[in-house]
Every structure is written in structure tokens, then in C-alpha cells.
Length: 230
Ligand code: SAH
Image (cartoon, rainbow, N blue to C red; front, side, top):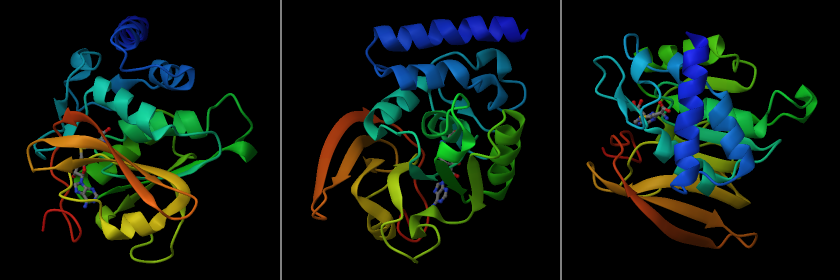
């Protein structure tokens, strides 16, 4: 069974490379390594290697499609040793992909970076935590329950993260997240309406100056919360 999944995963990744969604060797390796079938809702395992979003039970939330995860990785460029924040854990799949890049199992744990992922729906926070543990990422990923638009720790210190990934559609970049992004850091966030958005790369320069680069159109579930949609 696992062999069948490995083959399907390799075919999917090959297709993402061919279409240009996936380019960097480290990101290709991460997508080859993380077993998406361990992150889908029970009963959806056979669809795990289709390039589509899949429902997460009755929560109304979805696991993002692999091509979007690929675009997000390429834009974010997570590097070994970095400190990363993710808002919207969902299944935990994208957090595992980032963990593979900042803390690959091939290097010594002392050199590992760390990712903190926040989820506002309790059932999904538990789901993501269990999936990450089962897939072997519990030492590299911290799962937090709460409103990620307030930052983590909420409204607290500044310039904590090298990279910030938001995997739900926002009306605008939440102010606490902008403050918690380090100088020289990158945030990737879908910005736009509740139904469809533009994946956006935000670069905070060494001087603190912010540049926004619009990337492709995308459709994420809405980012709710204090600095999201109400
Ligand atoms: N990255 C996920 C997909 C996320 S779907 C994966 O790989 O599976 C978006 C998630 O963002 C949903 O689970 C939703 O509940 C969550 N979300 C929305 N607003 C949020 C907020 N303010 N704080 C934390 N999580 C939020």
C-alpha cells in the first residue's frame, strides 16, 4: 500500500516540476518526502495524490492543493535553521513541508529551524497535531490553538520570524504579523476577497521598508479573526 502511495507521490511531484510550479531542489525533496496521505481526512487517502484541495471532515476547511503548496514554498523559500510562523494549520501538511526545508532529517537536530503553526478550530488543531506526530514532525513543529492574526505570542514581541506563511485568504496583511516579521524576512499570504485572492509575497527589507509582489490568483478559505475577516 505504502509503495503505491510512494509511486503516486513521485508522479505528482514530477508533474509539478513539469508545469513549473516546483523548481527548487529542496522543495522538490520536501514534497517527495512528506506523505500527504497521512494528512488527509479519513476516507480520502486514495485521493491524496490528486492535485486538488480536499475537505477536512465537516469543518468547512480544506487541505490545500499540492500545486498551491508548491507555489507557496517557492515564494517563501524556507531555509535550514530558520524560525517560521504558519497561520492556518488545517491538516498540518504545509507545516510538514516547511519543516522538511528548515529542519531536514538528514542534518543534525542542533542545526534545525523551528516552525510554529496556529489553528483557530480546535478539532483541526488536534487533527494537525496528530498527523504531524504520526508523520514524524512533532519535534520540529509546535502546534498552537488560537487566532493567528494576532501573531504568536499574541501582540507581543517584534521581529521574531524569518518567514511567515498564511494559508487562508486575508483582506490585508495582519498588522501583528507584519510586526513579527524580521527585517530581511518574507511573508507569503493570499490577499483579496473571501472567495478568491492573489497569492502575495511581502518582503521586509533590512531598512524595514516593505515591498509587495503579487503572484498567482488562488482560492483559499477566509482568514477569520481580529485582524482578518471580522
Ligand atoms: N495549511 C493547511 C490548509 C489550511 S486551510 C493544510 O496544509 O492543510 C486554512 C486554515 O486556516 C483552516 O484550517 C482555518 O480554520 C484556519 N484559519 C482561518 N483563520 C485563522 C486564524 N485567524 N488563525 C488560525 N487559523 C485560521
